[in-house]
Image (cartoon, rainbow, N blue to C red; front, side, top):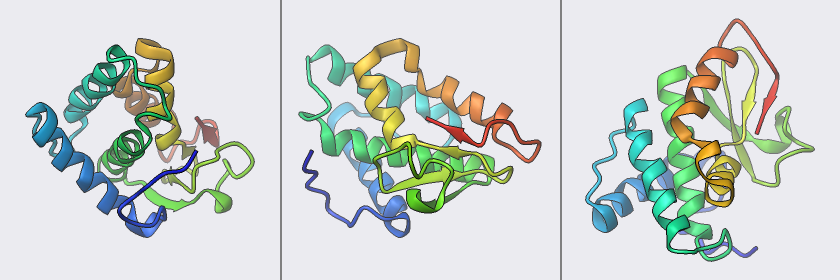
Length: 148
């Protein structure tokens, strides 16, 4: 899959990608994304709209990438996570994406992959539930070290 991103796909640019999601959400859907956990309802609805329009991951690649970065930035802010290169994470042999979010307890979360799964699999991949799982299993108390 060839992505045509405005910024390089690196941990250092994750916030820039997330900000593109904020701008697109406002322009395309009238959603005001504020990086709060509650805003994931709107992001989930955006991806569902793409799904209902019959788009594939290939069709919506850039949108899904920036929405995944938005999900990750919500996790960074609300769960004290940080972006790291996938190759330096527990997901190195699992995720094809260049960056993931790692939480203080050491668990890694494939947020970009999650956006694609939400499009492909539908409601079973509900984004607010993913954040809730990260909060429960990914914090300082531990839990699984790798989450997709």
